[in-house]
Length: 515
Ligand code: NAD
Image 1 (spheres, rainbow, N blue to C red):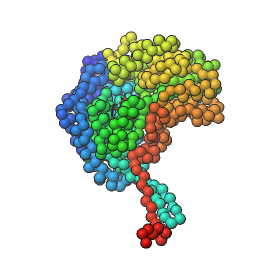
Image 2 (image 1 turned 60 degrees about the vertical axis):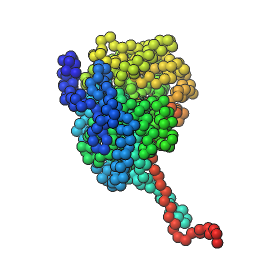
Image 3 (image 1 turned 180 degrees about the vertical axis):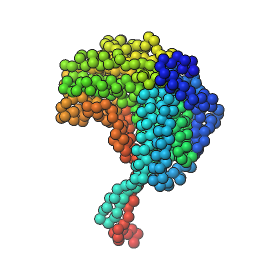
Image 4 (image 1 turned 30 degrees about the horizontal axis):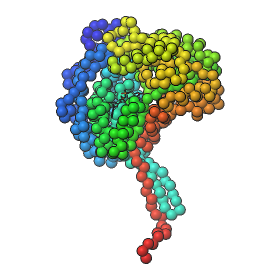
């Protein structure tokens, strides 16, 4: 990395690399450890795996490779801690979660630098992602005191009322695309609800998960309330989904992994919450504000390296404006600056892993084979900033609905356009995919916006907007994009059980058998 610092092309990049190095030194020396029962620890069998940065694919440290025994240790710790964490006053949990948010803000630059180095995501977006992590804790902190509230359901002779109680220790399994933020999005509501957590972070980006666990404990989280076990999906991940003391699994990742987890969790009747893949449509009518629609479509596909579940991967445009709209998209896509992710000027960094690079670039060939117009990109940059997993921002124009580029989640900076003639046609194309996560509708006609919103297969619809999150609103998908909703009270529905208590108001009739 010092060598890279020497090659840094701007003072800002050099300064970020130097700052990163101060935070990275301990990981280079000690590796990325598990965090169980409030302590940093190694795997039971001494196993580790290499951690590499997408900037150069060279291993920079080792991470612990968790086993079923490590998961069992973490589950025992979470079960033990659950006894007191669930009893703690909501206001006390609120205070601790706010202290965690404060810690995250205090260390936001460090988190952003480590995340950017570990994932290849541009630093400019990772600073915001760290702040969003803190916001997740604050939001759920303030809901902790009321999390157990229920309903009064009076009947003539009985008073029924409900309370909500935490389900127990839960497992959280996260992907590599924005690992820090996504981990907080799951862990914060679980803790606010009174659950304890065993977290299995993605093996391609483990670093900030360990940092999160440390900061949370520095902020006053009692030992065992959050336990972090690194490792691979097929061993640590699988063991977590099978453990009898883990009552629910909150999972973010690929649809196929979601199916596997459902099977693995069946014998222990796991409750599951899945946030899975997407192939999200952006439907643009000729009457829309086209400049804003271009801004939003470009932002949603080329930010976060296109490794974003709610990305605008399919733009479905009214035929009369399709070609002109494609030109506008192309003009912008050509300007997307590929660069070193730690350079604050970079918009597009290297993809997470050589295997993912291979997947994304395979679609360049698929598009050509399918006869799609590769309008922009469709190749790797000629002069990449480093020897990493870089691709150019890519635009495939004029696909048809059944082509693979219009059907499959590419999960990279690759946008595909399609043309439609009528509203029905637009909906038919939009819904003709296995996924149903997010949809974006652009039109000046309010009634049409509502008709389309009701008709599109998606858990979330944004009208005349990019994805702007409002934390009380439900987040989640339909079809192969997921099961369940997060956000606001929806998160508590998952992490809590509703109990009904029925109290007789007087001497109502009780049947007398056996008299
Ligand atoms: P992935 O499914 O390969 O891995 C996700 C996590 O699951 C990792 O921690 C992995 O180790 C673990 N895992 C793998 N196999 C497992 C098994 N058998 N049992 C238990 N755990 C297992 O996903 P990924 O490639 O890391 O992430 C990219 C995917 O995530 C994309 O499809 C993307 O759309 C999706 N995603 C969805 C959302 C959403 O909110 N809907 C958000 C972000 C990412």
